[in-house]
Length: 373
Image 1: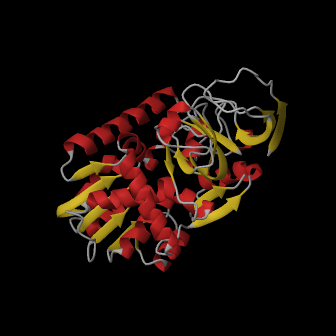
Image 2: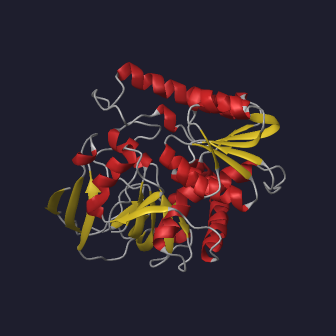
Image 3: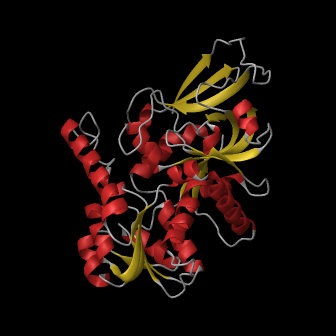
């Protein structure tokens, strides 16, 4: 990874809602325009922490994630877009080192341990800034590397399975299909569904993925819907769709008459394997086509398809932060008691983030990659 070193100008005019701070050493990963993993730069600078407009807290990062979402942001494709220059890393665990009056009104104080979630990155760093609406308190008793896996991965899995239940009835004996079960969210869904006694089916791309998923108790199916749908059509009580093949149609057809489909992702729409054109796999027309496909799939799932729910974790956190906080407490309890065990692919330093992007895009990561600054 290439290095940049900067000595930032220090602005002495602090906002009067913030505490006095001194210049400190800060390290992050940055990319200045859409590009390849090799375009990610490790940056070291000395700065005086100040809150920019729109952010309420600065967190000293204990752990952050390196994810497929980061790869999409880096290439400037996908459902979410970030401003460049971009610091990747969308989930964070750490302690508040600086905050403004808005965060204080929400009950937060310097030294509080929190999680943070963003659609626009910022976490692969020693310090990261977030709006107070994007943070939640977390127990000091859980390991940071495992805790950061709860922020998005396990919360998405937990909420998706909760949405699929009728009157909170356990999934014992239910047939549950999880598309692309090898992803971090897919593996979390498998673990949580098996805990409730479900019969879990997953789709996977490679034999090595099949072998691992079988070892944790799942029944494996081919990745393409045309291959797996004839085997299970009309038999599933629950389908968790992370991929959005054919606008969720095949997943809906897999349901039995009382089954529930929960749509959690659209990974099949966004390829990072073909980077030949200027827009990394899409010309201008193709990129617009993908946007239209994504909008249509979401609209179908929300308003047209029966027995179907569209899950958006970030929107849920914004709309009902108390529910997110309570469910995070529950997942922390499960983690502390050893009832769940996040699958961590590797723990890496900031200097290794670009290599991690390559591994994710090659489909080689097995679990969540955790960055420890």
